[in-house]
Length: 189
Image (cartoon, rainbow, N blue to C red):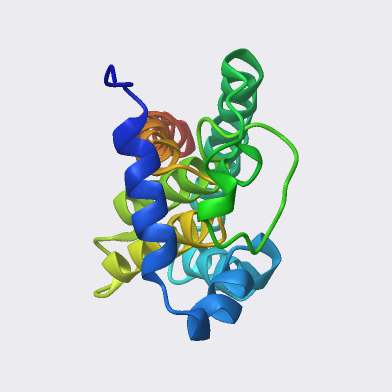
């Protein structure tokens, strides 16, 4: 049998998906939904305003929202171009998985991973020097992204590439934010 480049991805998918005990299924099913993270999003928005100038806070929120929006668009465009089926509908694989959620769009790459890593990297780079425990923000994209494997809807490569793309876009958005902040503050003086 000839080795298929996706073999490692399939094998790792089956291993990871079945690694989580059934008792954790409700946990993974809960955290995979974006709406359940709204309290965290509100906290992040409030942190932008904590002890900061109003214009600077609004600029940070604008760049955060733009970063997430652009990341989402790139992710959806890539899914449209690649058109990779999700594990939960892949013949020969779906019978080996615990499937807790069944979206019908394409898989590559994970929007959960890309947008959550983009947002987290941007927030960390922007607010990390102000708040001692800002690094804890990375718990969100790790759990959020891993949930996609445990509910059976993304291959590990989808999550890895999504995390990479999100990280790069978060860094770029932060650099644009710093450049814009310097221009904005120089105009205000």
